[in-house]
Image (cartoon, rainbow, N blue to C red; front, top):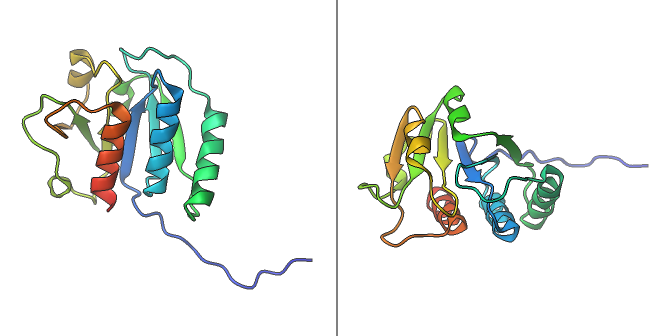
Amino acid sequence: ILSLTKSNKQKIKHPNFHFCIPILKNKDRLRFAIEKLIELGITNIIIYKAERAVSEKFNFDKYKKVAVETIKQSLQANLPVIKSIGSLTELNSFEGVKIIFDQNAEIKFDKNMIDIGDINYFIFGPEGGLTDKEMKSLNNQQKFSLAENRLRTETAIIKVASVLTL
């Protein structure tokens, strides 16, 4: 017999932040990025197939298990929503601002440049970067750089999540 003596409701910390991650060639790097996003309180993750992606497959069951393990480890109650889209152009059917991280962008990313009340899609490229076609295909977009040097995809993801959440 079990009786509930106390309950706590944990609010979703960043409901308007959606991180769009390409399927990466190295599955360990993808897992690492997803774990760190969840640890930092990001609960909306969109996986997409980039034109320059080497890998084609994404195992949802495996990453759902990773998400459960990570929320337990980081003492969180909200299971992240991990979904998949076929390509970046599908984001045009989602309302919100599309924020692309591009090494050649002239404006350096700063948390104060975005409205955290808006729905924001943070878009990261694969190992070979986004194609011009992919970048031009997105409506309602802004472009930012993260560093003067080139960052690996998972490093860029963690940097943006840290800037936004800490």
